[in-house]
View (cartoon, one colour):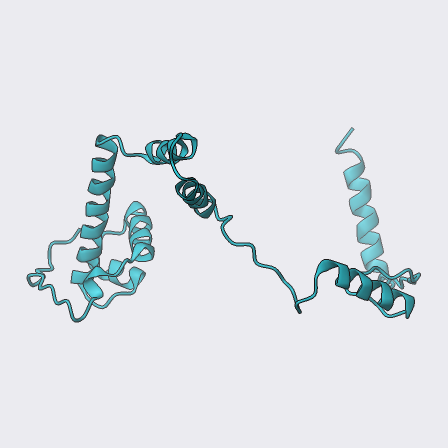
Length: 180
């Protein structure tokens, strides 16, 4: 990176809170820009959308700290296999309350995105009432959402100009010998 910037010392001001916000999107943009060979701080400012070079450098510091943190976790043997194994052991362990086992299983479901089941219900009707409603609509001849119509359609193809027909025939003749 260019060393033409001499940022002022970092003063932590708890009132502003900007220094501590998580900016992983900006970090990912920086990684992509740096991997593309862009090292000019002015360009990096534009790419991640910050006002000062200090914010670029602060983001780079956060990336370095995150990298060191992940390395420290790995060195201590705390990886994803360890975490999942620990949750599995909680579920299988005798003498552990059912509440803790259920919490462990909910943690796994949440981690893979299966913790919420959102329904598209327009009203408080149950499935039996919905089936009866659909049957009533069918008997009255009303159209039901998602139902296919049994109508016959007549397709009117547009007439092609003669020059287009000739060009298509020429292309067809030229293509005949290609796949023999």
